[in-house]
Length: 245
Ligand code: GLP
Image (tube, helix red, strand yellow):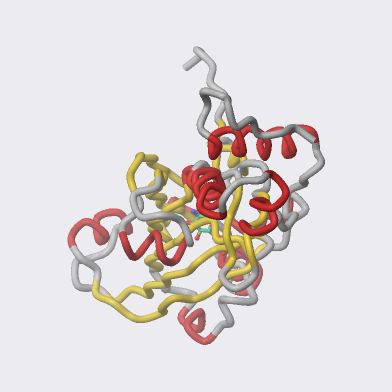
């Protein structure tokens, strides 16, 4: 066991961070493992709980650990790589990694299209849209907040579907015959607001990635305009480029 040296010029919390990083690197602590409590770490390494807390908090902020209220602190999964080549939905992405996707509906309501949304969805301003605000999780770890504005022509019954148990893309494709075929997506860096931080269980001001996606079904018909907030520490976006036109 790597020790913490009292006479080292490196602060003790910093040394503990390095010790814990090494445990993750070596595989001794695996993704999803519960890490020892502040008290246990304190006793094990002869440091105060405060010092242990500082080290844990910094690794939470860096995305290596995540906290679950009332349960403790866990080792995070490796970052999720979302490829930007094939159009996929959240459920598919998470299942492909062998994780369990889940969804919490934060709100679901009818709204009127504002100018910007109307433009994206090729509808008139003031038209009724279905607004779905969802928290998306993988193995119970919050990863993203997604706000989808759905143009529900041909899928009016969507409001009655159980959108916590079902994938939106799957419902559109299999139940309503409106397969998501193509999408345009913008990515932007940002910092988590108070509300976003609370829902994603990350510190206020943590790095996040905002995406805006317009999804089209057949005949180039826009069906969804979604704004998402992804935890920056948990995602990598990947694309492959070539020079040919
Ligand atoms: C991605 C997109 C969203 C889309 C979602 C569908 O996360 N950013 O725009 O709504 O996938 O996911 P699912 O089919 O799991 O509901």
